[in-house]
Amino acid sequence: MSSKSSNSENDQARARRVHFGEAGGLRGFPPFRAECDIEDCEVEGLIPEEIDGAFYRVGPDFQYPPAPGNIPFDGEGHLCMFRIANGRASFKSRYVQTQRYKAQLAAHRRLFGVYRNPFSDDPSVVNVSRGTANTHVVFHAGKLFALKEDSPPVAVDPLTLATLDDYHTFHGKLTSQTFTAHPKFDPQTGEMLAFGYEAKGLATDDMAVYAVDAKGNITWEAWVKVPYVGMVHDFAVTQKYIAFLIIPMATNVERMKQGHIHYAWDSTLPTWFGVMLRGGDGKDIRWFKGPERCATHVMGAFSDGDKLFVDVDMAMKNQFPFFPNLHGEPFDPKSLTGHVTRLSVDLSKKNISDYEMEVLYPEVGILPRQDDRYQTVHYRHGYMATTDASRPLNPKLSGLPFRPTNCYTHFDHATRRTSSFFIGDDSGLQEACFVPRRNGAPEGDGYLVGVANRLLEGGRADLVIVDTQHMEDGPVATVRLPFRSPSQVHGSWVPGDQLPKR
Ligand SMILES: [Fe+2]
Image 1 (tube, rainbow, N blue to C red):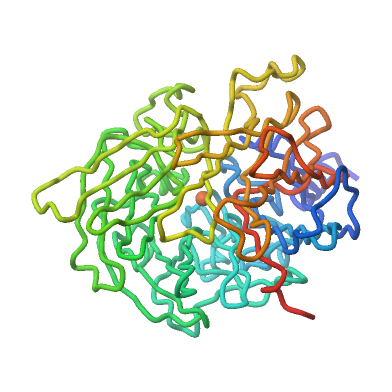
Image 2 (image 1 turned 45 degrees about the horizontal axis):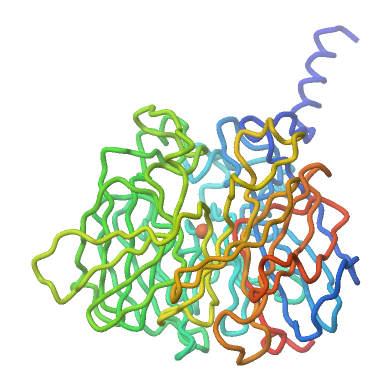
């Protein structure tokens, strides 16, 4: 055999093999890729007998080595479920079988290019949904939905995690091409409120807003225009209003055509806070202007007459090093820090053009949550994964570019006091989720569940269960996994009495 043909065969073999290597810009975010089942997980401490339900979480996990220039947020959605009952816990993980996942599996290779850039895809997938279902998992009307904001929901069996519908359109009534990863739930009506942005296709300035009733039927739809096209990751819903925050994470088609990802942060753009009546036709929407700020998640929101209050995690600049700064500004870690910040506006004032901002607490963090039974109504208790730089850090981790998120903090808006759970000097925490102590427990009375990564053990994952009344006491129980586990963006708790009985 000549060396020429041998080289050619090697090239073909190299093209066929799956090899992540350093994975482009994804160092530190290795894929997991294993679908797992563990019955009767190892537990330290005692899981309270009163906890009965499932903690679902989802995050990106690349099925095949990502394209050069891609970012961790573009991995395929990998769902995990911790089922907890009778003091025991089981663990299950499955990839979401999206259209994209199935097309790539059939081809045994990557077919999609970089994050939300259809220009970078293989021509064979022009009619395949790009949705990765990797951002949030929510439960409504008996269905579990894995969500990514650039595509419709993917319905998943809540017990087996098998994918049931890779393009769920609510009986054909979803007219938007996209659907938020952060729908809200009205505890009084059982409705799910949702929206889609870039709703008529790539870089369109249309947003569609929906109400889905307790049986899973779309009962309200309104369309609005945004001031400029960019990321609208989360939104706020109260009993009276719906609000959006438009941040300078702008959609950039020219850069996409050059092979870059969907967004670039344009620091010359303002923020816009848009408020519309819930249940109206959208023509009443008012846009209030603010300075350059970054805020992607809502802790809670409520309205009091004509006044609207929305609590977000807000920073001064682009918080996401994965998303480039359009004008080349360096990332300053201090400007990336988020604080719980209350945005407010008095809708009775007809001549105002801006919104109010008040930083409520000094704690630094991301991914705020609340007792989800109090979405859309006045609420008192919030929670957030925070980074307390005054806590000790294991010397072996001193080379990390950022301090790990090392606390869960409880924010009591009635007293403006906080209390924190510290995970230790060798671990990092992912987003927490609130679990009521029992059906009908008062707001904020229960537990936080969340995954800790043990950074000196290769990131091995533990689920920690922390009593919200005794945050400083440490976890009442820790569910030990023998591996790192898929990554997580968001998660939800579903009470056991809402799960199918099969
Ligand atoms: Fe999110």
